[in-house]
Image 1: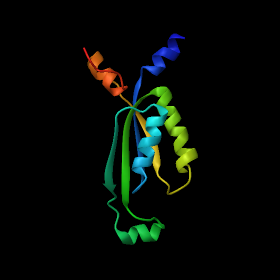
Image 2: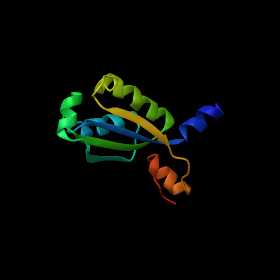
Image 3: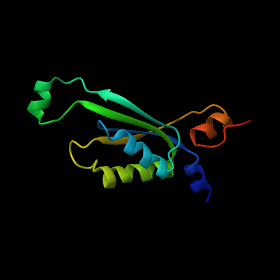
Length: 119
């Protein structure tokens, strides 16, 4: 039981890059999985249109979704990216997590995981 508690207290940064217009849908899905602090940013690739056409890729405009979550919630988000957003298909986007190795203070920790964040 201690391992399960420890896993649920680890913070991950979930990142998804998808076609423009998908960001809000992904952020809403992340919230339903238990993701807490969500940010949708507009991104744009640096490849020229000639290279995109040659590789058979579409528009270089993307939505980048950043979300903090406990490990179990982040795992649900990654699984959902395959099921709901077809991110296991080429060209549909990418999703990954990055461990947050250090958070200073209980208040910061609670804010990142959606707690009250009050002292």
